[in-house]
Image (cartoon, rainbow, N blue to C red; front, side):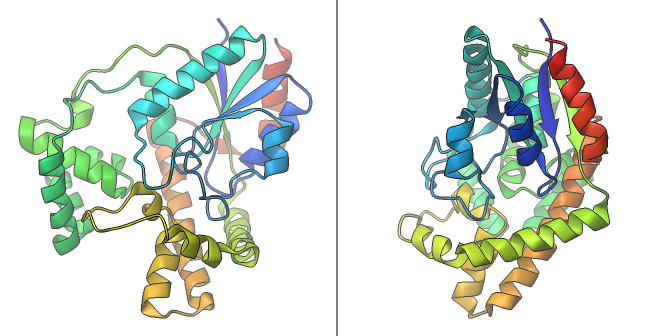
Length: 300
């Protein structure tokens, strides 16, 4: 069976626009591979497709859990593979689109056969994170396995999980075997040159504030709570975290915009590095990717 096309790229690279363009020419249904688009009510800060775009093209794995709930890579693989199978059963074309390379890698290579989580130990490590900081926990991982530390992408949940497993078993999650992937995939990496990507990021952040990001974050405060001692994943999303901190510390909107823009640029750099080193996907300009993706879809 022909490999499933996957459109990858860092944040603000133009993936959504290109995917929608392809969907106007082919019977495509989009399967999102974005760790934050699964959450309801996180719309502006995640640059979620608009309601008009969602209605124009069938989308999957968007708005499927509440923001206070957890959603992990194991559930993503299960949901994504089922969505792909259902789309193919309808004689339509699944197009996976997203910037969460960790999710795409799990689709490609399968899920690690790691033991079930120890919630009590994870809670203990969350407290360590609060007192020691993320860099200290990453240094602990790096001292044993530098490649594993890089794979964390400074994601607190991944760091907590990695240390929980390592302290219990002496091995990191990546040291265990993997399940067998259900499908094969063909990757298409999209990104403008970095100076242009930086401009796109800056413009996107400005647009998010103009669209009401601060109001969206305030609304989330009505349903999200930190009284468990552990932040829901939704609160870790770039944009939401900085606005929450800005509101609590009395920062100006301009200061929040500057902080989010910087954090997003840094994240985009990490995404590009991760896509290249972990997925071996070279991101190219839209003028290069569009004809390649078009030709692949035309092959039938």
